[in-house]
Image 1 (cartoon, rainbow, N blue to C red):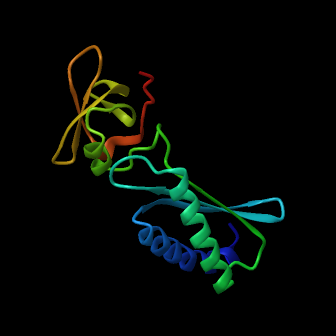
Image 2 (image 1 turned 90 degrees about the vertical axis):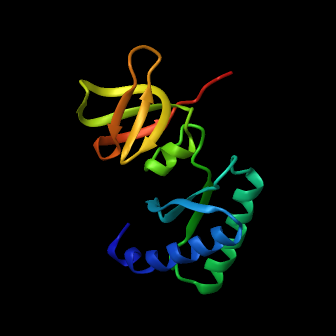
Image 3 (image 1 turned 90 degrees about the horizontal axis):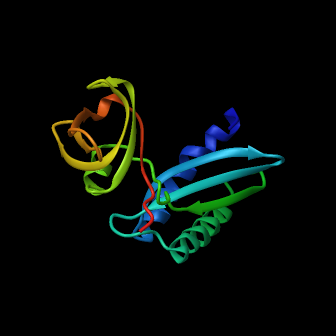
Length: 158
């Protein structure tokens, strides 16, 4: 994103947050990146319980595109993409870990935690800045979320 883009981006973010909220959803992430002569504006939307439907993505896309076109903030031609975080969604904070307690997750640490640099296991309890990981083999591991480099859910086929 160029420095010129940075001027309109905060306004677009604010509008996107309002549109997403009006659709009873949450803004998970927003990004803008050049692609050829166009700009690609990507919104990732979420909701507190359940999965985001295709209809919800389409509704947010229609509403946001209409609002952006009315305000004419983005001078370049742009492509709007709206999606959900997906089944292998990132875990951004302790609240995400709490929300998906019992789910299988992969954690990679900034530095070893109890001798481990990466752990795959079920999400257990969350308390006092720590998340409990329950690997298939071995003892439970309590990791400070501040030590997490990246974490995401692991897709399970049942």
